[in-house]
Length: 203
Image (tube, rainbow, N blue to C red; front, side, top):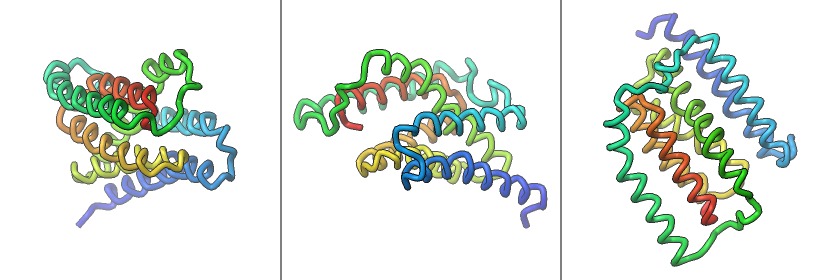
């Protein structure tokens, strides 16, 4: 039987997920908030989650910003990341771009690598896994839910391949984080793969 304290923690998790992760995306997807405002809405949600993180007092080490297991996690993620990068380039050379992203400047890519990728990994791996752990959720469920929520935020682009690919990579990054509890290696993988995918017009 699940104790009352765990039930309360799970109720808190549900509320946080609904209001910080799901509702902002739905407001943009349903066009209750203009699509052009999407970055402001998502930044507001991220600030809210950062505030909640302070209330929970998760330390940087707990979140995965640590040197612990760094070398082993880098070795484990290097080959799959390289393989995914080669597949994306291969698709691009054979099929061309799916989406025209030529309007993005180099400043966008710098922002993506330096700010967006680390922030996304904090939101969808570091914070969520700690939240799910407090709620005593099983590891496989933590991985599945974090991947779903990571994919769900891309719903606003109304593109099924993007949803499927982000869910698949979310499973991989979630499994990697659950095993090594190190965000640095995933941030590097995310920055590289995300930048390539946008550059060649796959997402």
